[in-house]
Length: 155
Image (cartoon, rainbow, N blue to C red; front, top):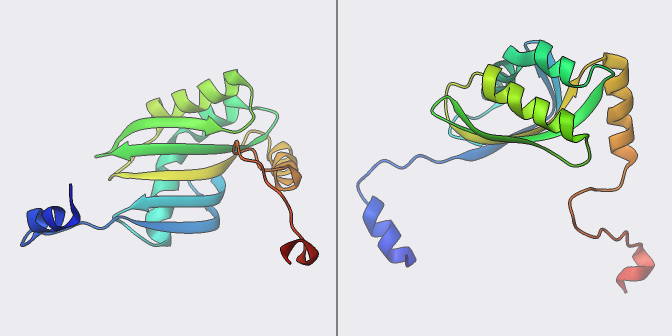
């Protein structure tokens, strides 16, 4: 739809803006997260903490998905309090990926709508810390080729 037509359709009607709020580190309800980012109408750290607390409703079950400890990159989408989709991205055993998605579907509680991504620290805390450190040193696993350039390469 041309831009002018879209603007014409919403003229005079309230518009809800979804903005992205990020936190490098946030814990709530016993669940620790890293690199949390949520796109939703609610904003700020209290809104993020509420989302993490909703996910943490399944903390014990999430811990059982990776008892030895893991740092799992997870993306999930929810609408009107219901989970639409959830998946572990990057490298993880299929069983762990399926377990995390199942737990989010069955146990997590959401009060609004949005899309989030985060690294969940689950299972044994020491194992999760080691897995997080390994993630930080690992190459990006996003399907793209990453090339490091120095100043001499930019000329």
